[in-house]
Image 1 (cartoon, protein in one colour):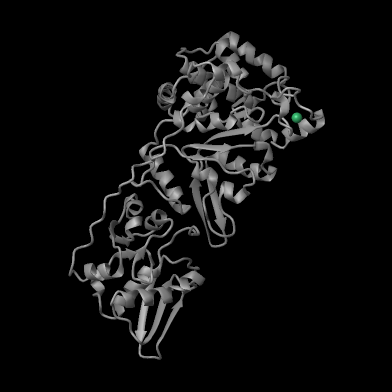
Image 2 (cartoon, helix red, strand yellow; image 1 turned 60 degrees about the horizontal axis):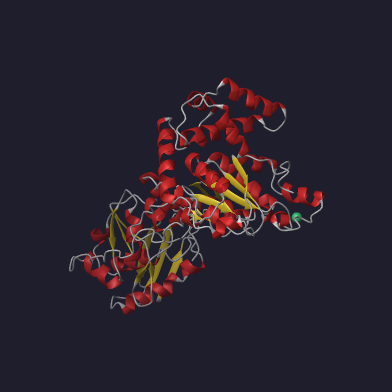
Length: 495
Ligand SMILES: [Zn+2]
């Protein structure tokens, strides 16, 4: 299945006259859209409905815009039913239809039903049963679903009621987020996860293979609050536009987790591409976590493409025939080895020459590195932690504190502390004189940029919120924030 381009309503006009039997579709149909002829004919015949042995012309308006996919099968069949007098024209007035047809007359779901339904302004829309939940997420037309053409014809003629829908049986978001309780030791990294979740601060984990970076990152969604109603709808829209399935109830409840491979192309990461106007991974992660494992292995130009969406929280995807905008507000988490051999944590340590190590780190550009408010080292777990039976705190306990900090942020007018601009940040988290001096010293020592200074202050506020400190922010929270933002080029621990 390919994802549809930006949706627009299509008017399907059917004309039947007494020429030689033929079936032509005009109005820039693509190959699969032209094949509708065969599907529509087979579906009507196997449903026991009339098939005119006459000259049929189907026009798809607006005629100048290309039409793709099989979504127009159903409206073409309905147009023919009307043209042949099987259904009265008034019965389909102000109705839209979308669906693919099986040769047996069944109505099949189409990818991206939500944005399709969103694009039409009518009183009612008829879809396949599998698309009904998705279609109903749109606050617009009434939704009817039919399993096949025969039932549709009967309902349109008023001879039978519209078919009942089976209640969805699968629960929402059936897969539970992995729990922090499984992580032994790793105090620093656990705290960094908590701060990241609480303030929506992007997080970079640096450490050798086997240190558990991915395991830690995978536990981040479980610390985030449920999606709000509006976020849930946005997440559903993006997934639908990408042709991905939605939970049975239609609306996802938990924040998404996306983990694209380091071989990913720029279009697959940020959206677009030649094939379709598909949202990218950064949009599919909207409202949740985008995890980039092996950050140093991503192509630099692919990572560059990510900078704008991270800055704007939105992506505009353009093609010759239109453009679409997708949301892209994510919590970015990345993991990288400290060097190509990844051996700094192993006995004997790293064998990479200094210039090789630095070249490896430079694959991640300074501006992207700057996006990570939190940059922490993760070492292989201490064997004593693995053997001991002391279990760590559960995700639920941490998520409680995270939710508390998010509520404070809401009172400040943002979703999370990372979103505070400079004046609001100064207002919410003024610095004590001593904390100011500490930051000035870091600035003078060249350890902090002006942008870095702002980020440190917002992380310090999140730490203060998490630990119940009242403003002004003292040197202790600022010091902790500085400690959570190492410079991989300078930190001696990272060789
Ligand atoms: Zn090495």
